[in-house]
Length: 268
Image (cartoon, rainbow, N blue to C red; front, side, top):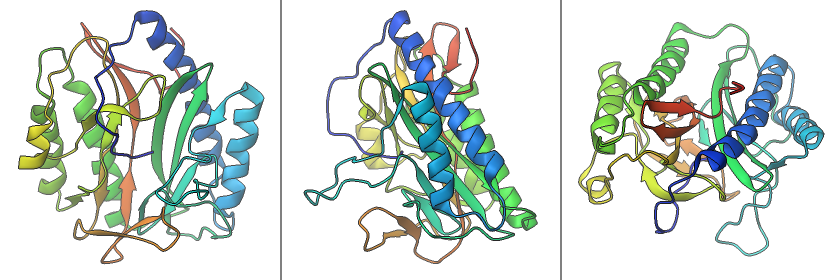
């Protein structure tokens, strides 16, 4: 789940805390796997969320999106996962929307287990999609991979964000700027803000990677112009020009050796 957390100290995690986060990440990985397996023409986004709800319950985990507060009192987010289709960038609310051949759909699972959090997302094809949409998915996923490959203690995050932005824009796509990644740990949204681009504003909150940081890295990439709107539901963010969007995310721990992905399902 994308967000821009309130300012707070960056929390450095112990090895034990990182392993607890990995357990939450393993559940998130399984939830996304089951949801992606179920994606097909004719299924609704609400049915996909129900698959996630049941799997979370089986593990004794919670979907952290559920009841996440908004600016309107009493109107928290109503589902366990966020499911965004085509022009929806992030925070699409599961419901009666039916998936059709040629759609792309993002499933986003922020998961809590035993007091620790993980956050992960993937965009997948519904049946056969156009070459342009496939390129959008490929580039967005590759930009996340690029970020992970370049993580090491002592490096400025802006150096990595610049690499991501360059890859995306060279491919002819745009980076959404209203929503960024975030620190994560005992709560879903911690400092620092983890941008996928470089700007004067983001440079003011640039940070140096340190071993023990845990980050939710989540490029949000659109086929057309980068400008977005929020729908009247107060949650769903869509591209202003109606062009499709893709979103990939992993929760990652910074270690002395580089990046340790906590949401890839590995057992350590």
